[in-house]
Length: 162
Image (cartoon, rainbow, N blue to C red; front, side, top):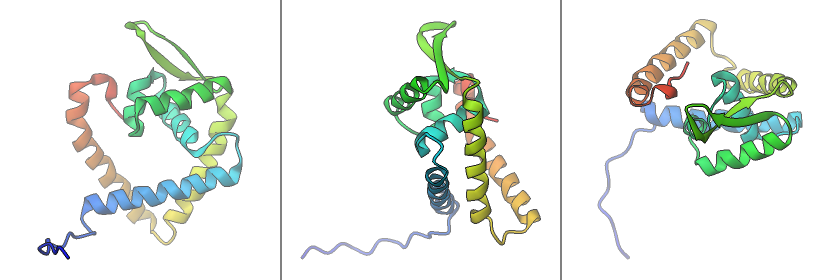
């Protein structure tokens, strides 16, 4: 049997571990709520619509970057959403090879249901957290996001987040 030297114990309470674990669990809670709501889109498609609602029209590869998934995956989601009449794609006037994806008015009722599912999952996630603590948590998250997004948005101004 091969043995390996004992590696240093990695602390699961470091910010990176806490954020990634919490994000994974919150995503699972959101996915359960989307499935429970039976709104006609998958949880992944709901995430695409939610990001588009926040960001407005954008190039497909920028949307993929925001979602943290492969551009080919986003293309498949957008294909299904376009067939359902929830989004439309058009040539980017700055680069006709690129496509800009935008929500259609038909996405409105679906987005309302996605919002409700998100509210239900947040209610579960933040049960027992005091309002002041929640506001402080959001403030810290916004600062960390700003710290980490600044170098990226300096390289590509179209990637600026809210």
